[in-house]
Length: 330
Image (cartoon, rainbow, N blue to C red; front, top):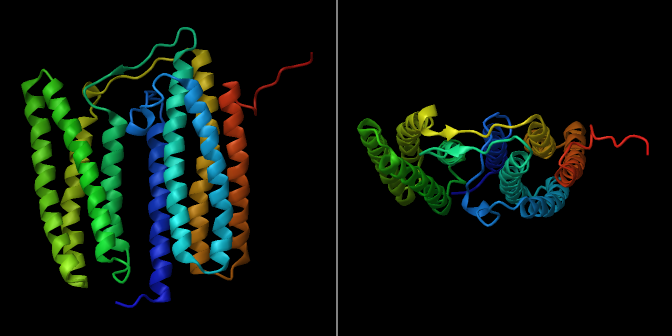
């Protein structure tokens, strides 16, 4: 099936939406919340309780981010939209990783301050299940909005594998919660949530298999139709799993702890916000490639990301905001 220039632009627009929404979702879960807890992802397990390791890793990743953002405008100028998509996905994954690491560093630094109290874990990890649910929803949106000329068998398999990975995360979280809970109702309800989600997933994967064999709009629409109950089942599961009684207690911070948290999370936000804006500017430029205002906005975003990276690095080293820190006269 031939790919038109319009389909390539539409595919890039979908990529921009997916990346922007993913970065924003992680920000909402980790930065724009007073619910301070450690971030327990597999990639962060190597850091343990070491603030220094988190800090050094974040600073190294901001340097990689600056390199990627500088490439975007050149790729856009030469019409290499497929390369732009690859760069945006790399930026998105780097920003998500950086945000998780910054939130974990903020927790470690803030809870070591005098009078701060660490969080108490519950039977469910709120970030882990919320993030898995969001990633499944994002995958289903890609199936719906990616042009059919771009939705190749290879891509639909990649999307399906991503859905399966996140379904496994949700299933494991529910089974652990069921085993840990002492309430018979909750024990059974977590198991039923998994059954509901699994049934919806099986119906979706059956239509995906049919689409792989016959790439047409009717089969794609079937995938879209059967993705909707899966998204709803995952949403219901997460709404139930993240009820307060399942989550334990967040950290309680002293005034000094709150200042440290604000400095680190604020520094991270100064990096993430222009990255989200970069996606939106790339989308606008792809749809109107001769618009110099959009080109200038991309340059401005790249500069803001570099400035934000410097601010975040300083906040991590100082454990306070460089914008408010003042040593006073010597």
